[in-house]
Length: 289
Length: 238
Image 1 (tube, each protein chain N blue to C red):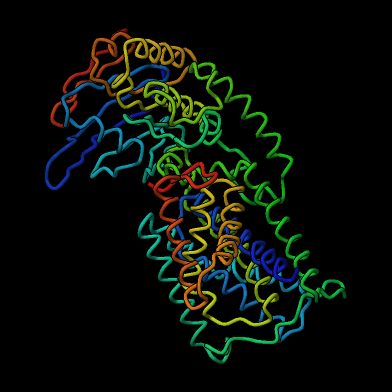
Image 2 (image 1 turned 60 degrees about the vertical axis):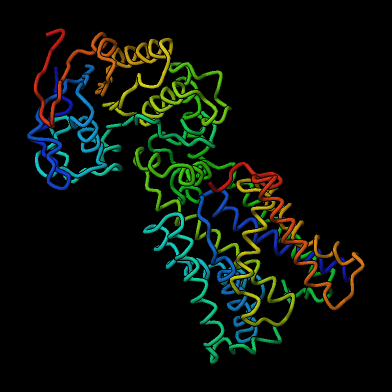
C-alpha cells in the first residue's frame, strides 16, 4: 500500500511540475531548462521557513509562491531580451547559477549536506503525518492547481500566451506587448513550481541540491513533450507516464546490478520512439519546429 | 476630404544604398491608395516605416494631422494603423475565432490585474467581442470556419483573416502588402469586394500591388515608385 501511495505522491508532484512547464513550453513557446531551479528554490524556501520559523504550512506555501515569483525576475529579463535558442541558453545559465548557489551557500542551504528535519504539513492544527494523509493533501493541492490551469486555459489570457508562441510579430502588430505575456507565464510557472517544491520538501523531510539539477529540468521537459504540448491532459498523461513507466519496468526480470540502468535505457528508447512517431506526444496540439 | 496620413520627405538607406529618397505623399480618409513599382523600388520599406517596423533616416509622418514621433509597431497599431503582410501573420495553431479575438482592441482580458479586480468586465467584454468577431467573420466570408485552425485555411482565406483581425483591432488605416498575390482569380475578386465594402464603411486602405489592372480598378489614388522616389501620382476620381 505504501508503495502505491508513494507513486501517487510522486505523480501528484510531477503533474504540478508538468502543468507549470506546459504553460511555458506548451502555451507560450518558451522552452525553459530552469524549471528544476524554480522547483528547488521553492523546496529550499519551504524547508528553511518550516525548519527555522515554524510558520504553518498554508503560510509557507503562499510565501514560497511569492518568493519564487520574485526569484524569476532575472528569467523574465532574459525572456524579454532573448527568444528561442537564446532563451534556452539563458535559462540554462539560470539553472546552473541556482544549482551552484544551493550547493555552495553553505551558511543558508547547508550546501551538499542539505536540510533535514523538515516537518510534515500541519493545517489548522491537523497534522498530515501518515502517507495516506499526505497523498490526500497533495491530491487536493494537485486538483486545485489543475483547476487553476483549466480556468487559465479557458480565459482570454490563454489566447495571448498562444499568440506569443505562434507569432510574436502578430501580437506586436496589434498593439500588444509580447514581453508582458511572457513575464506573466514565467511568473505563474515559477510560482506553481514552488508548490511542487514545497510538497517535495515536506514529503521527504530532507532535501539537498542533487534533486534540482539540470537532469531534473530535462525530465520535466520530457514530461510535457511525451504528454503533448499545449493541453492540460497532456501534462497529466506525461507525468503519469514518467512516474509509472519505471515502476512497470521493475517487473521486467533482470539482475538487480543493472536493473536501474536498463530501466533508464528503456525509458530513453521510448522517448526517442515518441519523438520519431508521435511528435505531438499523447495529446499535444503544438510542437517545437 | 480629410488627410489621414501625411508622409513628408522620408529617407531610408541600407549600407549606403538609398531605398527611399524624399518620399512625400498624402492619403485621404476613406480612399484606396495603390502603390506600384518594380521590386526594390521601396514600397515595402515605406510600409515598414509607416507601420513602425523600420526607422526612417529622416522625414516626418503625420496621422490625422498629428505627428507620429518615434513610431513603433505597438504605438502605430494603437493609433489605428494596421498592417497585412504579404505572407499573412496569423497564429496558425489558434482557431479563426481566437485569432480575431486576439486582435481585438482594449479587451479587459488582456491585463492580468483585471482578472482580480474586474472579472465581470472580462466576461461581458468577451461576449461582446465574440459577437463582433462573428460579424467580421461574416464580412470576410470566414463565418463557416470560426472553429477551424487558422493554419488550415487557404492562403487567400488567411489574407482575409488578417484583414478581419485589423477590423477587430479597429484600425482606420489599413496597409495591405500585395493582397492579391498568390491567390486565385475568384479569391482576388472576393478580396476586392471586401476592400470595397471596407471603403464604404469609411476605412482608408493603402495597398502595394503588382496586379496593376485589378488594383487600379478599385483604387482612388495611385502612386508610382521608382528607385525610392515617388515619380507619379494619379487621382482617379479627382
